[in-house]
Length: 158
Ligand code: SF4
Ligand code: FES
Image (cartoon, rainbow, N blue to C red; front, side, top):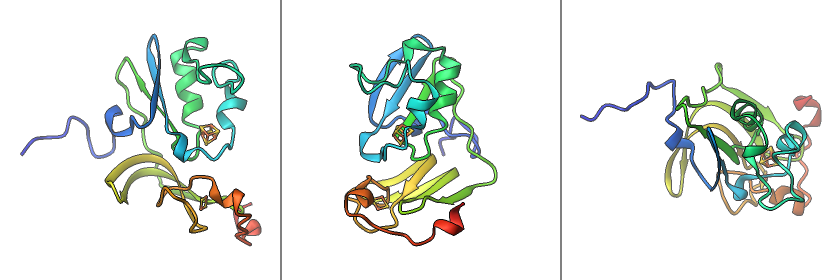
């Protein structure tokens, strides 16, 4: 049997490389637009790198690879990932955490195995649809806001 090149606690960068790639010396950032719900943690964290007024809107060469990676890890939906040239993969959070976003998805962080129509997806961060309207299930695609879905659980999530 072929041995995985990483331990069960560690995901290989290739597991997480989804979406469009933006490459700079030391780091490649991956962005999957279908999983972005515009929380804007990235824009707040490093506005010179994540700037929707620029083309491309992700310019990882505007920051250090370590700082860019740190901000990518704050993306709660998993729309953003990175691969460092040095090879170190993102470490999943321990313990796994679940966070209800009011009127939005369930944000999950940990060593995740998610079953999707395309097969298993290994993840460290994900936002899962709660409203039922996403066209990218089980992931949230932001449709909850367009359809005005209300979760009614604002108190539980604070
Ligand atoms: S979901 Fe992620 S990529 Fe989208 S705006 Fe928020 S932090 Fe940025
Ligand atoms: S919770 Fe976001 S699309 Fe359903």
